[in-house]
Amino acid sequence: MSEQHHNPANQDKKPTLIQTISSILAALFGVQSAKNRERDFTKGDAGNYIGVYVLLVLALVIGMVVTVNMVLDAAAK
Image: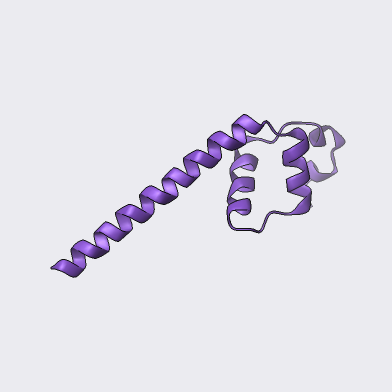
């Protein structure tokens, strides 16, 4: 395990942006660990999670729309 898991000082810090993004991605796919979920609810800022969640969902929807349009255009030719 890494040094970060054993250092009690790191357990009191807010989650980083990367940790926030990975937490949201894990939650979107239903594989969030209990440890990370507890960290998110106790140390995380709700505004950060909501903002990143909205951006990731928008990116997912836009990606799906672009993909479907590309497939439909290719099928029409």
